[in-house]
Image (cartoon, rainbow over all chains, first blue to last red; front, side, top):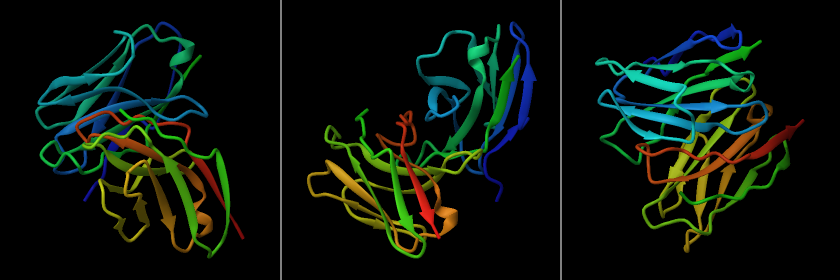
Amino acid sequence: DAGVTQSPTHLIKTRGQQVTLRCSPKSGHDTVSWYQQALGQGPQFIFQYYEEEERQRGNFPDRFSGHQFPNYSSELNVNALLLGDSALYLCASSYTGTPDQPQHFGDGTRLSIL
Amino acid sequence: DAKTTQPTSMDCAEGRAANLPCNHSTISGNEYVYWYRQIHSQGPQYIIHGLKNNETNEMASLIITEDRKSSTLILPHATLRDTAVYYCIVSRGSNYKLTFGKGTLLTVNP
């Protein structure tokens, strides 16, 4: 049973560029959440997708957008990259039908902005 | 969501029990306590969660006080591989955001 998978594992971009990160949820999960983790900090919630719609959003600018596909996989898009966007981007999945059950995380995409 | 308070760091000898405390004095009646850990360069790993009762699984035990204002994560026989940052999180469930603090860096020493 595959867990949460993310791609790519590492990515290097320059300021002003755009990036797309991908996430496949754990089998049986229908909800995907994205988090940003800066070096030395805990993860910060970006947004959550359910039924192909954004259900909740954290305190991130509109440069951060997402999408969820019918197979529940998800993408995180970041436009006009800034140096401060350098971070580990984590995807977590869960099943909405069992709300007490935990979110499960992938190992993230390490994004470096030059 | 309720905020949590954890010690910045703790040490534990290999083979001994590690007891990690967490204060969540503003927790609401419908909020769960979740524990995750993160080993360097990996994603957070779920450990255990609970609402009111104490819980135990193959990884750890979770003790929640009767007033639910604090909890303790117990790793019964710590190994070197348990060295990680441990996060205590209060949330209404998986359909809601997880708010991570800075966690506790647990170092297991040989």
